[in-house]
Length: 532
Image (cartoon, one colour):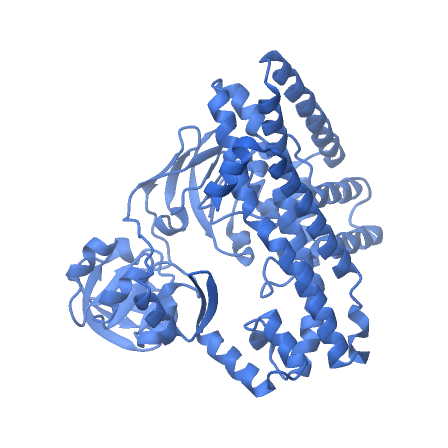
């Protein structure tokens, strides 16, 4: 798809212009429909009426998704084209960096902080905070299983702003002034280098895609938030728990409302998916796979493999904001973990979203697995002047909480200086989270990638940073599994349940603490490894 789009853009920039216009149109249609959904009247509606509302939502919702994928390809196309034509690094950085730093939620929070600076945390502040919360609580609802943000979250944001900015109103004005100056500077630079009409269009289109990225994400979060009352009403009518509901598709819920699928069938299907599910695309056709054992069969049948990366002390990425800093790593996998980021820490995550802003302004550096020059982390890091490395692909897997690292975003790498051991474990116990209950005694074998598979013998306890599909071949031989990665949706959890292997996850340091051949006892039920 990427190659096809790139070929079109070579001769027709109208494709990008139409893509932007089309994206805005379908997003506006979706959010306008959501704003008009009669959330307080559902109890009065018949099942047919409720099904009609869900059907309309599905139509608008699905029309947005093509625009969630194509812009990434187009962004990369324009970035590469601009790089080919601009060799001066300083000028290039100004052209591909976001012109506008304006963020509606942050602007609103700065206004409230300015009010508090003058009037304190009075009753009027509470009213303003409540209004702000109502306007932006949806920021975290990237998926239906993530709830909206609390008022406490936003109050803490105000406190953080006041700790960083002595004059929040001045900061608001500075952002607006900076945006205006950057626009002027862009025009001056284009004139100074005598940019061609083609280059000018490419730069302007790239800037539009920068703004479109956050806009698209916010629209989907709002849509998820506004459809929640509808789904909860449907869940109640079909006798489903919320956990069961979010493991069914919109179409399946629609079928249930119209009595085209029996409630007990939906309930059974949801229960099976809770244990494990996947979606297979094969020769243009989609099919859903339910149950861990069935997923493993499909992985083997279609030879689905994901390359793994061996452990290394230096991780490379792309510079989003230049700078060099030494600090302590804090791995963030989800929003509740944000509180562990302290001043000067290196925030390491797959990707940042607007709900990360409250801690981004106090961290010393940012490292992400994903992202491009227009991603959220890149935009915010440039605004705050925080060294930032993006697109490392493996940072969250190869780094651990409390590692001491050197982040050189200017040269594009992060290097582990020291793996710091804390009270998460001691010399005799390594703690983790139970993924599958049971006990096992045996020889520890450290597996970093597929080249280590031959070391694993029958009855061994496998120790690794993360499990990927190609591990399956040797998992049949092990009596236990210890994984540093902590993710309940990981392959480790999937395979542990499917193969009934005593397993703990989230050990963080097991692969660097244990050694090959060491005799250990795994008590997965208690979530620990006991060493001799």
